[in-house]
Image (cartoon, rainbow, N blue to C red; front, top):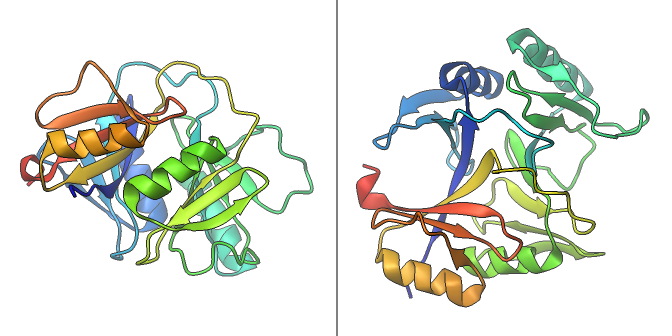
Length: 240
């Protein structure tokens, strides 16, 4: 069986330098240019997933369907993280959250939303700086990704789902219905990799319910999951 691996998150940006630097400085990660031209924000631990920031001319349109939930170790650590984000150019944003919710909602300099989660969150304990990759999505799409990646479900209740690698690290969560409206191309998208046959890996994903986009090539597959979310499948030999 040709397996696929979760590589990380692709993030479109109008200003690649500012966006990649913001996330590297906020998380304490490092920057490295990839062979395909993306600027990678590299984690400082083996169970976190890099960000691949790529140039895109289109401005952000509407609320993102994927955002990061950042963890904190204490109330003081949470406030320091929020303050550091503000200094780096983040802003507080209102996406409809109530004033008594314990987490804080901010956006990076290009408006990409993220949350800072208080230390009391046991669900995100021991997951790393990015505790969750928080996605809008159906229960069915959570099942799809569990099968596609071979990751077990760690939450499946009231049509909300979450998966996590057996090695630990960030959880990927889906919030269930109602789903958000789709407003143009998603700025944050999953990146997968395969070291085997691209065609075989794509065939496996489509058998599970994915659909191939017309833009796919021999080195990069562009697909959509059962909810219509675009994602990328990269041949690892072309990333080195």
